Amino acid sequence: MSSPHPVHDSVGGGGCSHSWTYVLSVNSDAPAGALRPTDSKPARRSLLRGALTGAAALGAGLAVGAAAPATAATNHRPRPTTPDEALRELAAGNARWRTFREKHPDETHRVRQELVSGQHPFAVVLGCIDSRVPPELVFDQGLGDLLTVRSAGEVLDEAVLGSVAYGVLELDIPLVLVLGHQSCGAVRAAVEAEESGEKLPAHIQYLADQIAPAIDHTTEGDARIDATIDANIRLVHDRLAAEPDLAAKVSAGELAIVGARYELTNQLVHRIA
Image (cartoon, rainbow, N blue to C red; front, side):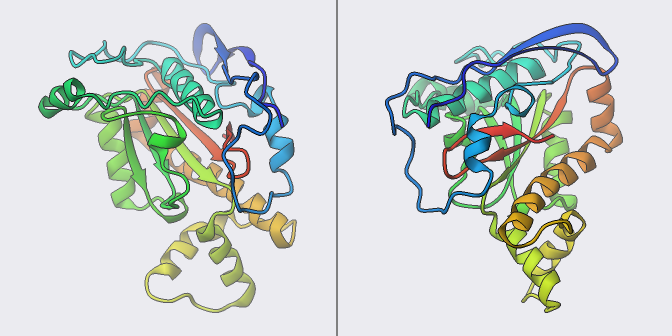
């Protein structure tokens, strides 16, 4: 299956007077079959998602305004300083990952020494604990590039919220990406617990309770799991967007909060919210 072609989307709104053009520069000339292998069964919609462009693409539909603070002194690579730039870099990195063209940036001795004095990541990635979805690999980023916060099913509790807020308010990070994924075990556990009425062991029930408001009630079976994964991404996205301190940054054009999903079958990250 070929990769999506570049997506161009000129957008505005959101209280901003600027118009921004987005390009999802996914390589479409990769050799046939040059995608990472997986032993997961394809989700019902995964192949369709892989072909989608337009609004579903990671870099599409983001309205931003004023730039975030200037590039930090530790400048091993030009640091994205706006939501637009940060989202572009993540999209480009995911394209490299999908087609085995990783650069493995920011791993040199010089970078490691520079990072001793401080960090200047350009994106917060709030993702699941699943071992198949490590953000630094999925987005082909290196040391000091991403502030990663991970919990099962991207569950948002006070510790997770505080970690995200620290990145935005203390480190001036211009992008928060909520990253869910295909075949999420935490979501499946929550759905199956609701269906059976049984309590889950130890603290796992807490995770199920937090995911429960996102459970889809219009479908069944694997389709229900799939729909709940998307709904859970939107739920976490909306909760973050409702936080006053973060909302103020969004209104000022200094921050974007984006919900996205990673497909295990084709390694594509695409936008959900």
